[in-house]
Length: 576
Image (tube, rainbow, N blue to C red; front, side, top):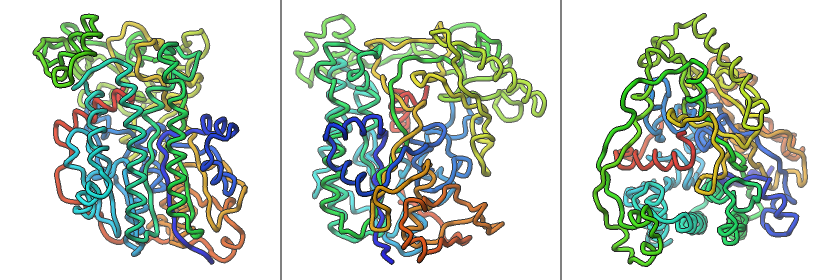
């Protein structure tokens, strides 16, 4: 029996819709190598198919109802502005690196979402780069950060990441072309430096388990339209420059895989290549709160809908607003970033715009909540029959809604108990909506005058994954059947499969102690594993929950970081 090591490479946003055509052209040799020698298939993600909750589900094997994670923000029912941005402290279960650390297995975790602040593991953890203050990047052990800055030239990626985030949060505003160039450069540099970190850490120590990120997500969000002539944001002049940007991003990942395989594949390692969701084009926006208004479920307050605020605007942005981009382009950067004070109108948050005493339902960033009495801050809908009646009215109206072309808009509407199980289901949004046409996505803005909007060439977010839940799953290793089957893998299957290949017990329900109702929801992908291994290694289960999770000391997000995170997530379409 050959146990070996497990390495999970998390390729954020990877889709076979891009990979397979590139394989046919011979453009991804390292993807080809691992797929031809292992098993692969399209893997179903969570709902919503977003970074959060998908990656914590992958690393726990449990559905979001057992994690208390349904999006990037906390329980959406406690605040009409959807609660605080989540940190690692909000995960209500142990993840695979916690479990293995308790069992004296060595682990390495790098750049995985929702690992800030880092936890103390039997090995190392590198939290994702902090957004605005990279000097506060945390690692475990804490001294590892200084070592990486020295050995990997981590400062270069921190500076590039800072520039990317500043453009996202409007600290430095520039042309669309400058923004796209920064997005590409940042993506490529992060992939390169994360690969450097992984290879360096493995050169210093042996790890039984590793999991790390290679991101392709942001590149597809912002540059999808330039490879798609039928996209409403397609712009021919920019397309000449950027038509291959997404494909080149996948080539960067493929090059990184080649370096990783060369350095780490000792013939005794099982590699998982997985993504948190698929990807595809975004053409149309459905303004759910406007729809709720038009259908009598939501009402706005009367009076001013804006506040007047003072804002510092860069000189570069002033010239752009005046239509003098050519002047801004010639200014030195030291002048471009200088600011001038301006007064501007800011839309009030939905919590202040909506008349909650006359509102039965409202949209979150990706779903619909009932304004329930005793749960929401100003709820009016009674529990029991009152709640059920509003749910049925919403379903009926949603199924009747036509899209821009006159076809049925909604494929299905599911209640939260149909999607999730576990002790935290009540914290989930009440209704999930699924579009028939995956080129639609939901937004919660209250003041847009129409129910629908079609994107145009000024939009910066042209690709999405809200309606593309199937990501990738590729597994290759000494106990994996070459070119074998893999039957409808789900993202929660990764952790139990990895634990089984390490011959480690899988957590089960501590009350029933029944493997059928085990604590982990995912299954072992036994069809992909050799009969030699499955015959000699029966699956084992345990109800032992040893130890507590310890975090590296330090503050959580400060106010600057919190605002920056929220703005970045809005730019990526996660916060509606």
